[in-house]
Image: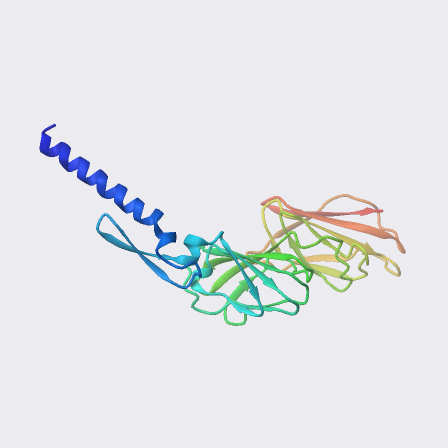
Length: 250
């Protein structure tokens, strides 16, 4: 290697070090309020870095209703106060597979998804400290999943829609359902659900149907024999081929 080639490599390395040094010095050059776009020159190319991304810990707190913004992708958003509304606007500007997480401090919240196509893999539970992952799946299309919201069994007695989730959906545990039929709306691989059933005044178990997209095949399995005026648990699981289900008497 010639002296000139060695010098060229040293110059290139110094440029890279200088570029990294500029980034490391950013806290001393800009404010940390998350409002300023920072120009960073690395090897002669200018990059724009959002100050909220550089200085933040990946999260922010909002006291009031909130509309998602382009810069919120990848962030954790904590919404304080009661009866708050989170709005997902059209043309958000996120790329497919971009996401964020939103936690509501109190119950009584609303997710306004009127401007987009929203898919909910499970029934939303209105409880405090609810955490939602909002995941963009296509143009103005989002998958919205609720994580670890239920701290007590769900008491819905009128809910007849079933969502099979990896965490497992528990419905009607404190108020067993006397509904005559249940309909499966969605299922993920290995997704499960458990529903308490009340057969008071009944002559047969409730009917299980599906209207998922794509459609699902159903397979009843052997369980407990039907008895009137009793409490049963309906168990469902999706194995990737069929949704298998059965009833067990408590």
